Structures are given as structure tokens and as C-alpha cells.
Length: 67
Image (cartoon, rainbow, N blue to C red; front, side, top):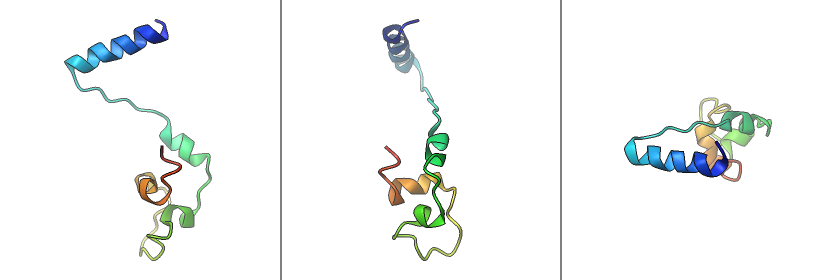
């Protein structure tokens, strides 16, 4: 199946049902070797618990990584 056929297949499937697509975002984030301070950013610098590993938080503290 070539690229165009795969795209067409996905479009047809989307018309029929909800699709969940998963990628290797966690692996891409790990390549940045972020420390606790990087996860916290300025906004959460005084947060009372550890935030390292909270990849969802990076959408706020490191949006340039999460694109």
C-alpha cells in the first residue's frame, strides 16, 4: 500500500469510526534529556511535588518541544 492509499484508507476509516493514533512522542521527549527544572519551567518552579516525567505538563512549560 503506497502513501496515497494509506491516507485514503485512513480517511475512509475516519468516516466510519473513531480512530486512535499513537506515536513515539515519549521517545522524542526523552531525547531532550530534560531535568526536573525543565519540566517545571518558571510557572511551576515552586510546585510541592516532583514533576519530572509529566510529559503532559510540557505542553505548558516547554511548548516548543511539544509540537
